[in-house]
Image 1: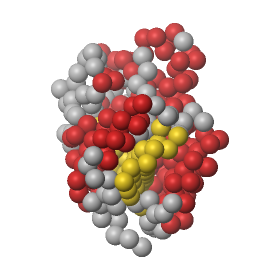
Image 2: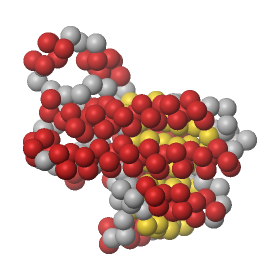
Image 3: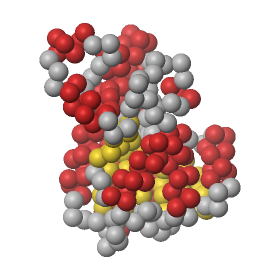
Image 4: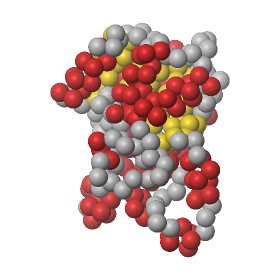
Length: 251
């Protein structure tokens, strides 16, 4: 069984165009990672992402992957694991949605839930079983501080992340002692292209800061990582705030 605190030599990214995922991949390549699979819908953006990582010296492959096609996940991920050991799977796909529009369009709301939660359940189970079979490896799941308590401003997104967060914790418990481990990463507002124009939090962070936190979490063998760390205390206070008070907070 490998030392769980070693940084990965091989990395599979589910959500291969995610800015957070790519920042994490760049940081790990600079440390130890040599082989990367970027899984996502075939696109120029996915190919460009792969090219940017190859320029850093990594052996990079692209894999056609669709979070909304769970029936394909076992075959798609199985092909990657058949190529050799995967030291880390980064589950980084997800969509923010648009709360104002999604409230009025249940089909759009369900797409947020299916992408962020049900797609992740399928991919997470497949990846977890594969890591367990090989006897080592990390499943790192990008959750959100929004998972801690639903806010009026984004309760559709927040509820999907709450489901994902609970699932990932349970999967980590199920895999305990097998050599496979799960890390749940809970960033606050992350400044990316997809969040441009949205109101910013005083605890806003960057993809690079999340990547740094992931690396430190791996080195420490952490099961939960907050970015920034101060959010742990803030969300604990908000989680226990009386509902009548919580409704009046400018969140």
